[in-house]
Amino acid sequence: MNFRKKILELFFEALESTDSELNCELTDDTVLLDSGLDSLGFAILVARLEEELEFDPFVEMEDAVYPTTFGEFVAIYENRAK
Amino acid sequence: MILEELLTKTSDGQVLWVSPQKQMTAGALRQDIAVCRGLLRGKDTSRVALEPSDSVRALTWMMALDGIAGSVFLVPDSLRRSDDYSDLKTRFQPTLNIGDVFTEKVPEKSGDLSGGHRADASTRWVLATSGTTGTPKLIEHSTGSLTKTCKLDTERGREFTWGLVYDPFRFAGLQVVLQALASGSELVLCNHIGNVKDQAAFLLETNANALSATPTYWRKLLMSGVLGNHRFKQITLGGEPADQSVLNALKAAFPEARIAHIYASTEAGVGFSVTDGLMGFPKQYLERGVAGNQLRIGESGTLLIKPEKHVPTAAGASLAKTDGFIDSGDLVAVRDERVLFLGRDSGAINVGGNKVIPEEVEAVIRELEGVAEVLVKPKGSGMMGQLVTADIQPRKADADTASLKKQIMAHCRARLEKYKVPALIRFVTEIEHNPTGKISRA
Image 1 (tube, each protein chain N blue to C red):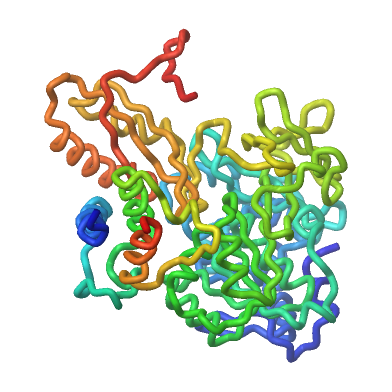
Image 2: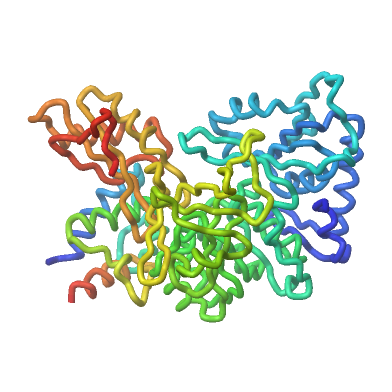
């Protein structure tokens, strides 16, 4: 499973469904809250990922970490799948 | 007691309120209160609508009015700008408006309503709360009921600088304002700062070390990456149930902080706080009560609360049943010695602290030709508490669902506030109705 590809696809879908636009180039260092996707859009992204991947790492987390950057966000999904 | 008495233990030079625009010391506040009282002389203050957009100004007026006015409608900024306001204002029937200009209109004094100083009764504070049908309702409180859980220890209070991210005229915001005032803590007003990163930066700049916010807001703060090395002494979560993940994450990020999550019901007045770091609250509270309130689970699975005192009233009538218990409308379940929150019995959805009534969203979606039936319900979210989802039964079995989905989203976005727009849309072949013909929400 290529998580990055799936996340990118649904990231742009969440941007569209919240009427938002990407403010900057999306790289691993992009701060999520600066990306143009607001927190509601971000919650939608996580919910859509749960629909497709059948897990929500932010509900399961014992040692909860909330990601600051896009790279951290992708890593949370990749680590969960390991 | 009136609110101004909360200032007796503070010296004139002590800073009480800080906003990006101004600072207010206790001495300046005392003077401003006196000026406001002067302006009120001879006015009919039996029913005052208090609606200044500047929070420091609004709070100064609130303190000046205590003990003088009969009822004061504390109008939050967002409500003042909403469609519901003119309706609520008509219902409240103010005799005096205090807005950005002192008086927008001073109605004719009616003969039987007394103006001037009222020694006879304490001032009633009227707060708007999102009602069960989506229409806001007005709930009355007294100064006593609003300050009953405030700690009055100014010795310890001076160690705290409270951040305010809520509107001060919403119940949660007012609690923070009054707690800071009662304990002589400085209050940093961030509520007019547009985004979380700038709010976080202002909290850092002012060394705010205590903050009360929704779990959704705390997740955003954690994600902002701005407060990495900040030290909080007090972290309070309220407005929606806190999940274990956010409690754990806050503990890890701010190990020195005391972390409390608040359960509060506007209908029952102030609720209680839980500080053991676990979600929900201990089951023993059902047996021995908490903070003077008795709790039990009602027949329909909702939490019933019998407040110790100060039962607030809706439009003058008591909300309590004959045995003194008030139905909170919050569905709960007992699991592993904890009482956990499951949602609202009305089906209302709490999106990051904002209430969404399913019927309102359903009515909007049903306006579309291609939709035969719709069911709007909550979906748990590790980010926002809950999200809005919509199950759609298309009118035609062979409908182009992709284009119908786009149409629904565009229609909802045009008609509803952002948090009410369904986050997820699913197409189903049939939406079930119960025997009375209503949509089955269970």
